[in-house]
Image (cartoon, rainbow, N blue to C red; front, side):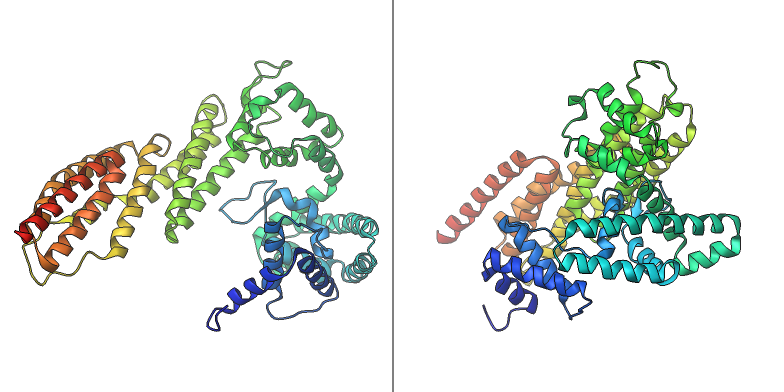
Length: 468
């Protein structure tokens, strides 16, 4: 380990040198200290590294979660890390939890919260997790009753509503609060369902839909308000999210002609549309951060979700689904079109043949070449999935321009490589190398290999001529 390495690297190396049992002991002691309110600079970083290395080594110990994590644990399947415009029942922003916990402990139930935290910590320190779970369930019931009173007051009194929003910090947190109370009310029903559902569903077609409907219906007859959350729970276990729509489109045995909008599972459409909006949101944030591989993956997800939705909403009388789908498609198409529209000009600017010049730079800017190459990857993803993002016309036009430009540039650049010498030769070789990389993205790797072979022959010809 070098003395100049970063503190995080030194920490990672040090923790990696510990045995798994030593890391587990250290992790346990730090978590125990956190329960007593110990706050050390960098503690979160140390905990994150310890947990990461324990997972990597296959030694995963039970977490010594504090009162807040235990209180919110039934919410885990419903949490989302990003926020998008519009609030869908059954989805809670993870960022809302600290605000709600602080309000719960500081404003709504201060004395009860203090006693609860003290009792949970005592049970955990005494290594009695069953007692900690019982205490948590009792406090959840008291908290739900108090939250319901606060929500009813806010619904009937605009001033009370504004005061509650001020305590919570944002109106969106108030919306999430209603979902949190709803999930906690039906947490036992959802827990029983979670045990009976497969942990991971690779393909929903492998399950009998009538059995799945029965599995969803049986525990929910007494608590029909739990159905949206049950669908979210199922949704989080699907490897192919769009398959949730099969619950809506496959007719039930008892109601084969039931309209989609009146199906008890119609909320599945809202869930998939929400997932589509989240994919669009991730595309936008990925473009801002220039995380092109992530963006390409999200474009495929968007395409698959939109294609599934397109076949469902066409048969639905409720046009709000169709309007939302078309809006997301149009917005995403405009966003992607703005990224790829100038691509032919950027390619031409790099590959433009230039007069022979002994003072030419040593080569093209590698960063600019890499950026154009990444944008070509983005273009390829848009081209493959153009059908569901309304980009057929734009990608066809751009493909025609790029193919024509690269087809013309390649032989001219190759001739320049043959004729140039010195630093000018290096510059033209870098241009040709860029043309190879770009052509591989547009024409395929086989075409790029043929060009590379031609370039190699040209270079050997120049070397032979120089020796002669």
